[in-house]
Image 1 (cartoon, one colour):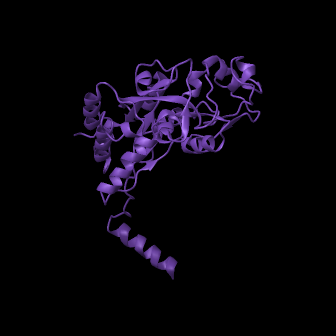
Image 2 (cartoon, rainbow, N blue to C red):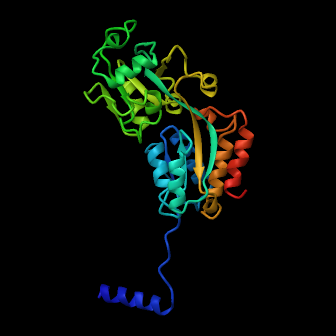
Image 3 (tube, rainbow, N blue to C red):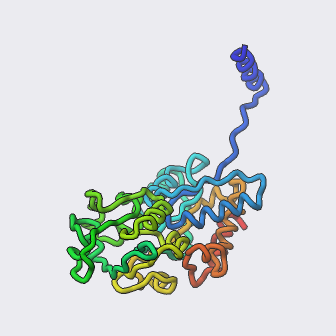
Length: 306
């Protein structure tokens, strides 16, 4: 009986020249875990201020993976926005165009960094890039084995998954020959692109050194100790001027030919535009703003046709 009624309904729709209504477009945001707190903040504001908006889907799977999915094609089946810790490569731009994404807005929105942390009362290790590289890529058991000035305590590292598509910042920090050889002997524990899990794991393991995006570490600053790298502390000033060795830009990528026509996306881009200002919400969440934040704000508003 139910099958008969369903078939009759389909026949009636066909006779009227109608098709079942399409599901509304859910905004989909992907990219680096470094941008996840800012995208989540903008999405939460959208839900507070627009009762009719569908909750955006925000995922952190890494810059490379996010750009790849973004470039799979236009339309609702593919991500609308990417938060990336680098600009697109020529090969990625070509792939986008080949799949029909011929225009991509690439707006730098601020700076971030891969920072080294321990629990608040953990060891204050003065790490160098060479010592960190050895700790990540060799079978050294203790810190003193990678640098004689460091204590003879066991190496325990916690960070993103040892995968170039996910480990934003880790690959850039290591020499090219070592970037794909992160150790797998148990001294390094990877948690995908889930920076929040990394932060919690470091807080619970006082002897471990964590690798975190600056914003995520900033959110837990009361429970974490920031370590120096090559003698430089990660601060807004050292990150913005690239004096901190693991600094990186943060880009928002969008499809301007589609953005103005996706329900609620222009409003969401407006929240990003507000957030990137020096006194905006993102600065309180760990974004290091650009000096020309006003121009960034205008560029973000233009994507949505505002």
